[in-house]
Length: 181
Image 1 (spheres, one colour):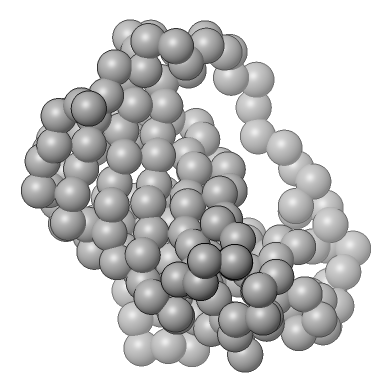
Image 2: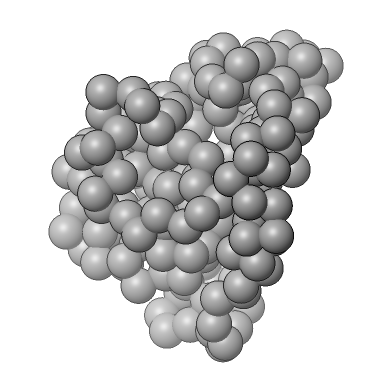
């Protein structure tokens, strides 16, 4: 079952900062709706305090997390050790979307390098932290970040990115409105 904590410990923060990838999961409440699980990278995750985290979210083909957070706030983050000693760390919390122009944006965005494809910042209040063994997680070697999102955003340009968000990021696959609605 693992070990539980009510807040992020210093050792957890150090582990998080070493990871090149994490996963974020969210889900609407309906029994016939879809759970979302997305991998993230790009040095986009920050521990802001023992009970508060944020990640920089770039424009993608959907905006499920934002829609799910508007409906119920539930969010889970998972970090796996793909090198070094085995470890899995999960953060359970209640999240919200912060958009450019929101009052919190300036303070939060200062924690990140903002790529052209920046869409929003997801912020979560963490109420439970779980560690588990990770013995069956395979070992992988980090080769670097992909530049596809940056190149795609440059080709689209600012106006094209805004249009793309209007077409693809306003509603979840289950019809829930995102913060961009």
